[in-house]
Image (cartoon, rainbow, N blue to C red; front, side, top):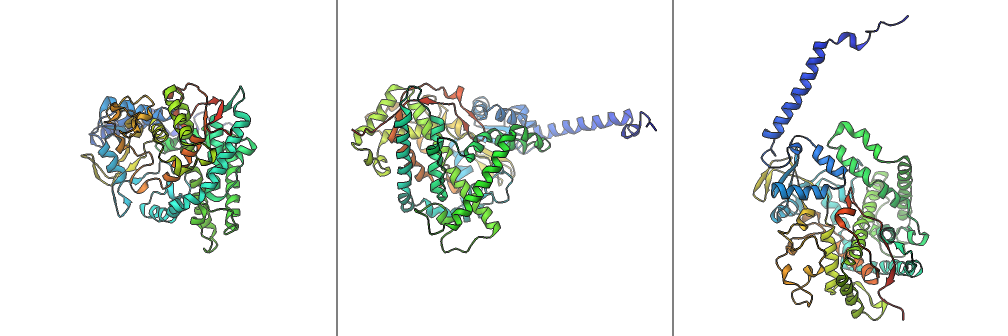
Length: 503
């Protein structure tokens, strides 16, 4: 028997009820807008109106890959404090950075980490842990692995992989077509980082292809950004999976299984590895066998150490080479400094490189040029930020990228100038850079969340840059770089020549 046309739900809903429902939705939206505009704790801070009433402004600029540039423009338009979302405020002053990231009690931060980078795992590891007490416990546990004694013990590993990189460049980098440097930089730095983290051999340079983990990370870059945005739009969470292909999902599953397997192998090899690694401090030789739950936390910490020693160092080395080539004089000064200080390839060591002012200046300038674009959001405990009271629960962040490109803090900020970091006694120092806010630039963060591996990173970056420099190609930063979860960098084809010659 056929059902009547008006059976089901609609037979019970009158037009008056539909109108009432519509009016209720509109009224709720209007009340919400009025609240956010006039009564929300962040209402007194200036910013785009659409950002005050909705997360649309925030999401749009993330999705375009130009979030860091949008924040920079917002500061130029609205001033030192800008409301960038209904419950989020960005700052650019030097005092604000110190208040947000450096304020602490007994080394536990006042402004706590948000779930911005939370991937949903129960075990967040030392990097993503939001609880200050748990973070401090894990930070103390891994601190010895970044001591000078431990770093010194790991230097042969860096030399081994950089030597292999140099050999590969001699073999392939001098051909007419050259090599794609972005890919090779990732291979080199991730191979080093995996070996340092838990003696994992990824063999990407040897095999001349990306490991599943690296493939997953770059394919998931846009997805990770969409995942963070969907936290502000919970009802839209299912669509985040539209930003990742089925093959990427399969690769992610494969990479997770492989990483878990590598962890089990490393646990079994305690006391039997050929060199010291970070894992020795996560699970010392005499420690009891970890439980299944403890292994999950170990897995996360080991993976974070691997990732922490990869992306920023790879980007830094790639960027230093890219940007130093924009100015012939910059490139010439960098190469000359290295060649004049070393007569033999084997003499290039982290200790010998540390006093090279121009090399250090080039690396610092790249860190400035490619400053953090994500803002490092924190939750206010209800405190003052550079004279502005920020209510408890309001999210705050610092415009690191905007700070480094502001003429208020750096002379000629859009130009790549290693000279700005030189001591006044250096022959290439320029008085125009005397007032630059160099002492207020913290590329590895500050306070309780400062990166513990910064010294190791400096050792590695100096070694890589000093050993190899390529021929020239032009890159325009604003046009060719975008920010997702990590900086998306352009392909970069170069011909490579070792700085030090065998002859």
